[in-house]
Length: 125
Picture (tube, rainbow, N blue to C red):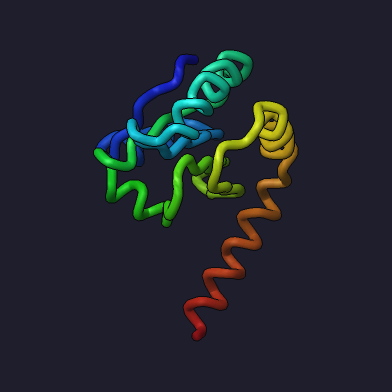
């Protein structure tokens, strides 16, 4: 699957209809973002079962805010609607491949249980 440009309007549909989504938060003026772009594209071609989406922080400020993006590029990996990894800064392709392998290997039942416990603790405060 080719990399898509994700907007806030498409966000819910994208995460609801896809098990794994990897987001690249970037801006046109960002040098490291431009350097990372081809790496992101190349890796997307190797994983057609994962949605690779670019989010332009200048155009999608609300979406960037939802992910608390403070610097770019920022990469966020989601599985079953849960952000399981986020990293500010460009990363080498080998690190992204390693993160994808870990994403695939996650015990999502345990992740969902941990999220539920965390939400219960937050609501008890």
